[in-house]
Image (cartoon, rainbow, N blue to C red; front, side, top):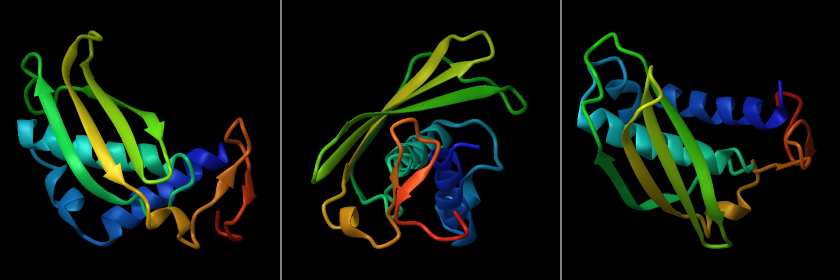
Length: 140
């Protein structure tokens, strides 16, 4: 497994382990609030995929709903893209599609990362994301 994916999964686990909003929201039915929460979480994980353990603080989260997302039990896919990562701010976009590949919603998430950029748990990956080349520990 790519080091980038393994690290991002570790950050996700930390979100769940803290029993925050993410852990409380996801087991329920498809609702606009759930997609907004997923926009928040997936945007944060997009930042984590670049080696940021602490993913900063949200300055703007927005989700637009294109069509009904489905009912409980339907499959939805979320794809998070880090559109820009600067020294102070990160921008992400998340697309949600149904089983037919139709866009049902999309979101944007802006994060202030200035202070989190120097977190000691941050890592740097090889260009292909397969290896941690700086930082990390034996558990990574």
